[in-house]
Image 1 (spheres, helix red, strand yellow):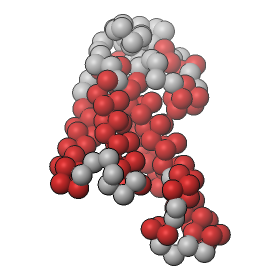
Image 2 (cartoon, helix red, strand yellow):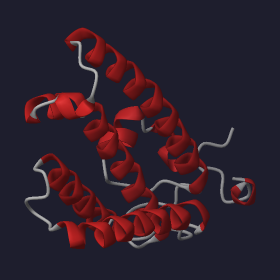
Image 3 (cartoon, helix red, strand yellow):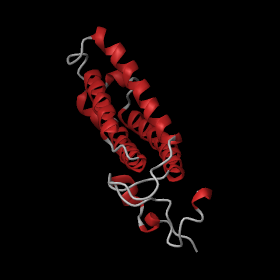
Image 4 (tube, helix red, strand yellow):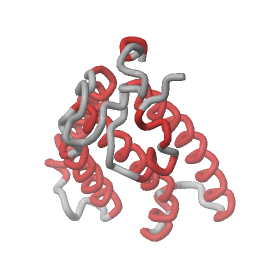
Length: 171
């Protein structure tokens, strides 16, 4: 039986750690799983929150309600960041670009909640477009760039198995 190096790692490693490497197959599966579960959880969370508090419009929320309402968004953003960093570790780049994208995303969201106090409106549009394009490029690289073969500074090759690299071409 062929087992990969990270077969002993569990969901806690996948979602909460930025250490190690994640191959394309596991990254794509994790990415799709997170998107689907995020969509489901956010839909239920929104329905429960709006129905319980009798709110008809998201603009009726105050800042604390926004933070509570967007708790699943922040949680899933963290999960996406951890798997993306591990994927870039596998490529050999490291997570610095993921963190840069995360910082821009957080700044844009904080600016939205503070009603454009941090960033003037004339700069905000291009910044949002830049952040979206940058995130899309990161995702495309994560989906299609092959990981580093063998050991790199972020850990063992996740495709290497205990019986050799005979099966590597199939993973």
